[in-house]
Image: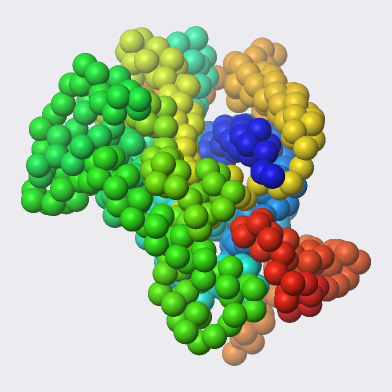
Length: 534
Length: 67
């Protein structure tokens, strides 16, 4: 008997570790590229301050990278410990991108990170610059493979179920690689990482400017972060829109949940800006709607409908009934009746086998499930609407605030008066949590919206968990919470310590806290020379 | 004319090649020690069948062979 408590606890554990992990990852992705840009300016101009910037922000990058790696390791082990049936069912496909990611991180990313930190005195300027770009490239390539794996969970292309092995098997590696959901997810996620890195540099630079210390260093960092951040946040918005379009194409239940679209509206559907979704009554109370917007975003047309939750449940009921036929045929095939007719009939309906498997939660005998049980299973194909609805809006609101921040910051940098705009510096400083809020809520939308599937329309989550005791999961969950919280405390302590010290932590004798040899870099005149002289 | 491997004369290239070689050796060592054959779970197919279908078909109570 499958324990629902084990399934829920395993989900909680994976969600917790993934969300912890994603505190560190976006900063790694973003800072790596910012370091590469700073060092490129150093190599092009020869100005020492850009080398100091690369080294200082690189130090914060190093702290974050080390802790990010640690939090990621436990996630991979959980596939074996908590999700053994999942691993057996799809491991042949899912394992490939994970293994490539591991090898890429081991051979490319970690090798060049070592050279980045220890190669300053041993490499020429250009060699070190190449190393820094390879670190940025390596960290982004690692993200690519992870998101190919995750994209496949959302949209399992290039694979087929084999009744002989009871496993999904890869049929087209190219389709796995070029999965449109994975590609869109990758560019959206890494661009969100660039925004995170930019807000981080912008906020800490603003802190120095508010304290009126290390002004030359901080203004240059602020300038690079504002330009890179503005380009990145615009990319995130455009790519997020593309991601919404892909979701509308392959994950209709997720899209309907994001929009709390209970009934199919006349095209083009309106967008619910605000409201309180109620899953019991299947309506959104106090809804504030903007006409046409959702239809245009989700279908790129004025005449295509966005299917509502009621209609989706009806469609899924049909697929569950079809899945019952697939299930019955699978039983026959596994029982030895491998006639060509049975195999052909099974191949015709096996795309709905996953829907039939949903019934396992409601009926001990899938083939003879009652209408009530089928309707119950059909209703379960819609994820919890309210958390997804709200998470999506928090993510979008955070994105809009960051767009305003970067637009103001970039404008001020262009006017060369950002260091005098106290409101802007405070705005930047207090915006520091925003990219993390957006990232975490974004993942909640992506992964809660995938429920009740671990592999979209193929394998229900409740069948994927291992046969372990609740005590085992509680034990590992508590251990991980304690361990990860410890890591977070260490990260915060080190980050705050080094951020407060600023470039003085480089011990070059040129910065604020090095009183004895203090020779502050001159403040760049407001209107004379540009901040960046490329 | 430069040989296609002339870049190996650079110290950086040599060092990176050495690091990668050490890593490759480590990986091969780990593989040889713990992963010398595919790790197929005992009766994996039957267990999966039980999980999804709820019964063990007598005809397939064979242990899966590594592929």
